[in-house]
Length: 402
Image 1 (tube, one colour):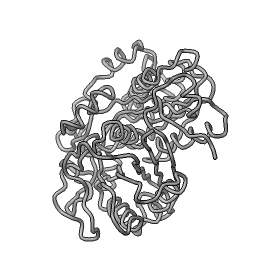
Image 2: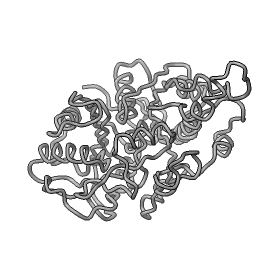
Image 3: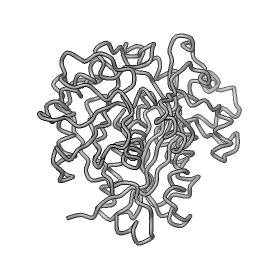
Image 4: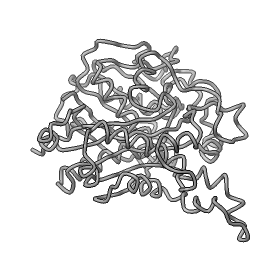
């Protein structure tokens, strides 16, 4: 039997706050990051709400400790701030950090900066500081930036599988630890709001102009968000040998692909069901052992139906508590998996289940409804966290109390 993989550190920045304590405080108080777009320059400021980090790029650079003119995109800055907190949380030395792997996820990378400077870059007669962003459309650019800033050289990789990306980073990191390719790995993802993503989701007609309502019969679509979250993973014995505080155990994970459609999940929930089954089998737990599901819950017509049917099929008897936390953070795309893994760890640490905000009406196709109020002093030992992406890529993590 392979050694347990444990979480020894985590960091997070989102519309809820600039670190994990601020995020937890917002979650338990029912505060969300939903509101008008103020930082991003977009024609949709007055009509499309989002979950925006209310810090300018200049403020993020100051917080991250990097100078202006050094080519850090907003995605890179969000990633660096969260990764630094994760490293600090894990209490690892500079030498230990340098010997760690780093696996990060994003979907659009630095496309926000390419949008801003597109016409200057297109003109061969122009030159200036905007050229520092010329290669930022490459998703791996943000990973290299963070790795350089933290002095990470052991192993670096980027994963881009749409909204399951950072969950897949966590899985890949765990596999490398189990194969003893690494002793420690920092895993997660980052995403900045951009005109490209707003316009793209508008074209798909799945954005809600109000506050999103996951699993509600009257749901109208998702709200986009931005942010970053990272976990530090280690083998249990390695962590214990250095006296690390263990936040949670990654007891299982599963990845599947229903290959149904480029942007839609299968209506019968085949991929979601398979990824959850794989995670449960790996964990060795019984269905009755699962206390809570942090659902992908995007509030789109297709996802909530597909995921809800899959949950119903898997738990044919008594269902665990279920909620989507996206009404708190918005859908942060590639960062969603690691952000919701961090929120799941907060659930385990504080024995609290965060509510599925805005739910009022049961979906006619489902026989269960999500949690609608904050559940405190609950006995939560095992949490399933779902992350499903375009192309049918479905990923599930099982996080357990240590």
